[in-house]
Image (cartoon, rainbow, N blue to C red; front, side, top):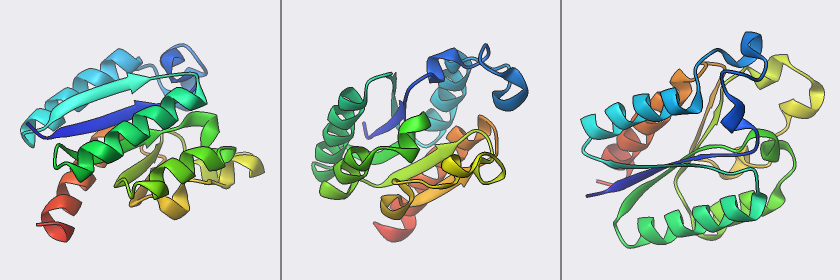
Length: 153
């Protein structure tokens, strides 16, 4: 079965607790469950992970890149959290293996602090979903499925 990776960066394990006015009350477990439904609708196996460690995220992106190359994955939905704004290494991992990646942000980062308005990932992402709340994850899976069908038949 073709896999879709949904990778989450630092502090996303705190969803539902951390600043619910900004990020909502859903937990990461709730997001997982909704992603599992969407992945199943498209015939994908969901591989859903979270880490507070940059190197682990890089390892997972590389794993996903190899799986895409081998025809075992359609790509990654990535909410890199704060690493979005700081990590050239994550961008290098995505571009180094040409991993189809949908960058997701729960909040509208363009309406927030100036430092959140720059992303090292956007230039190497296949698409970007910003400000749709946790629905952005579902939209990201659907976007990868659409890109696979339209761009890589």
